[in-house]
Image (tube, rainbow, N blue to C red; front, side):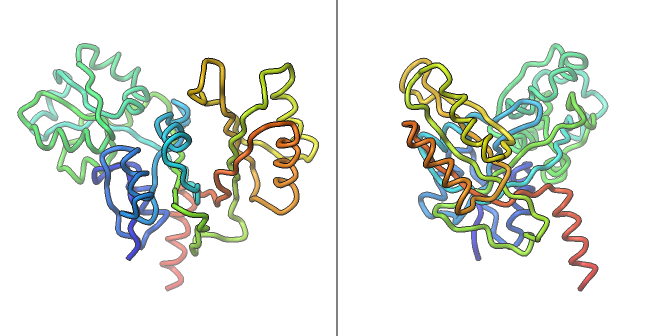
Length: 298
C-alpha cells in the first residue's frame, strides 16, 4: 500500500486533505512541514500533503521556503478546503472555558482567531504548536493545565475533547489550499479527475537584473499569449537584500506550445525559469460530491 505523509498528528486539517486526495493510501503523520517533505525525498513515504496558502493569512512561508531552498519536489495536485476553528478544552473545563490561562495552536490558527481571542480570552497566554492537531493532543495529554486548544472538530473527536466554542475564526470564508508533493515527475492519476477538472501550473522565475520594467516584461510574456495568472508573489532568494524569486500560478495545464513559449521568451531575456508542477485542482466540496455519487452508483 502506498504511504502519504502529512503534517500531523492525527486529526489535523492536513490529514483530512490527504485522506480526500489519496483515499486508499496509508497516512503517516510527521511533526513539522520540513519533516513531512523530507520523508518523501528519503523514501519513507511516496508522497506528502502540506498546507500551502490560507485565504486569510496568505502563503504558508515555511512550506514555500523549504520547498524552494531545501527540498525541491514536484507539485502533483491541490485541494482547497474550508477551515472552521473551534475552542477545545478538556471535558471538565467546558463550563469554565472563559478562565483558561493558555491557548495552544498553530500560528496561522491563532492569527485566524485573533478577534475572538482578543474579545473573549484577552488574558490568556499564547503557545504555538506545529499544528492544530498537536495542540489538541497536548490538551489531551495535560488535563491538569487550565488550557485550551484551537483546532477542528476532527481533532476534538480524535482526542476526546469538548468543544467550548464553535466557529471562532474571524472570517467565514476561511479556506486553505493544500498541495500534494511527489519525488519525481509522476502525475497524479486518480478517478477523481474528470473532463471538468481544472488545472494549474506553478512556475518560479528570477529576473536577470534589477532594471526598470523587468517585471513588466515577465508579465507581458504571459499577457500577449492571453494566459491567465491566478497568483503572483515574491519570495526572497536569500542571497541578498532585494533579491527575489517570483512564484506564478498559471490557470492552465502545461501544454506543448504556450507555456514552453513563455519559458523560452523569458530565458531569452536572461531570466531563470523553472516549472514546479502542473496539476489538477479540487475543492473539498467537489470530492465529497464525487464520493456521494460513487456510493450511489454501487
